[in-house]
Length: 335
Image 1 (tube, rainbow, N blue to C red):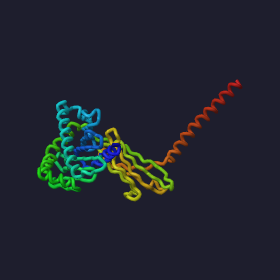
Image 2: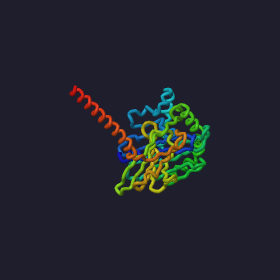
Image 3: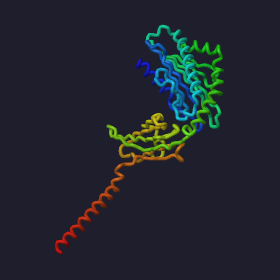
Image 4: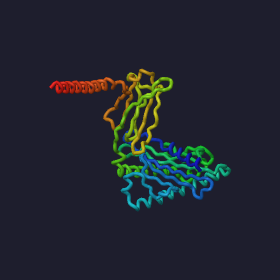
């Protein structure tokens, strides 16, 4: 059971990678996951929905709060009737996915593990102005069989015997055309509705907070890591330059990741020879910045002269005070 749940989490993480869309475009993604293992009376069903990189709806059949579907502040505006309708739609999706799993298990009746996972991901993208630009539907069974609707939303791309069976069934029912109509119609309407309800949250801009940190490796080379924190939306570019030229060697860049508070974070690191740190600069580009910013590592040594001056002034003041006090004390004695 634990292995299966870990697999499910990994599949969720792989599927819900930060979406990189052209500026001004938006995406809607739904992910359904059905989990089955020995001893489980009813398969576990997980359903999540994302606008861009922000989850707005979620359902887990084994969670105590499974009937609380909303995951975003703007969903509080919805009526009880809306949520009742949504719950019924989610349960219908569960039944459909369960039927698909049962059909696929007939193709592999001798599976020994008894642990099975089936996932379906679908959604649409819109361009600035709300015009449809792209749609997607993918189904994966036990990480071995898959069936994908092609970019033209017309034909199926498959791998595996179970996927071949499902393709034949879907072609007989003209399922591709049904999906195409949904992706170009209702899916776009759902996305535009969420963008309108959550515009104060989804269409905001948070400027990244940036800094560079310095670390010495065992071989005495230096790692410079350029951080961008607390920014929104997720699209951002971080590059390292040496003497004004983009650096590609010895550079590591992580994928943009959620910070857990509705914002995102990202870093890019470069390995440089000791003593050459000041030749390298980090360039950050983001929608929240009026123009790209350039920053470099600031050596702590650069603050020593200032600290020395301050220390001398303090010591000077103390010495002057001591001399004045001594003179006053001597005059008092002579008096």
